[in-house]
Every structure is written in structure tokens, then in C-alpha cells.
Image 1 (cartoon, rainbow, N blue to C red):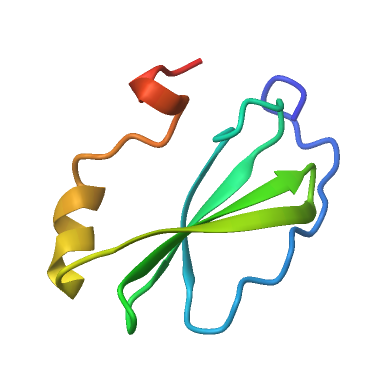
Image 2: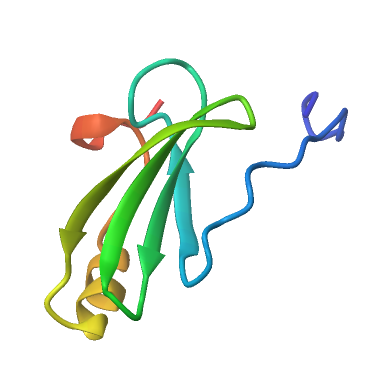
Length: 87
């Protein structure tokens, strides 16, 4: 984007089957967006660390107790900088 004008785009990695993209942010501080994922069936959370649009590595987060937990949490989470800081 250049102001509000689309300049170019790139495809990101294909999301693993059974997972949904919940948000993007720079979770590891490298200046590139990363993916926050959630798998409703296993209730598993995960982070995918990216370099631009290339998958580098991933890490599983906590398994949520119930499927409703994510929807309750999602309403209160702001995806931004770690520690709740927004740039």
C-alpha cells in the first residue's frame, strides 16, 4: 500500500488443514508479519513465524479448554506488538 493505493501483493503460506487464521502481527520482533492460528477441532493455538510471505518456523500455543474459550478471548484480544503495545 502507498497511502490508500494498492501497489503489490504476495501469497502467504498455505494454512494447515483444520486451522484458521485469527490474526497477523510481528510476534518475534523481526519486522515481518507472523500468523496467529487456531484449530477448532483440537482447540490448539499456534504461531507461524514468517519472513515476508515465507514460513520459517512455528510454535504451538496452549490448547483451550473449550471451543467457546477462543470466541470469548478473541473479543478481548488486540493482535499487535507483544505486551499489548501497538505500533
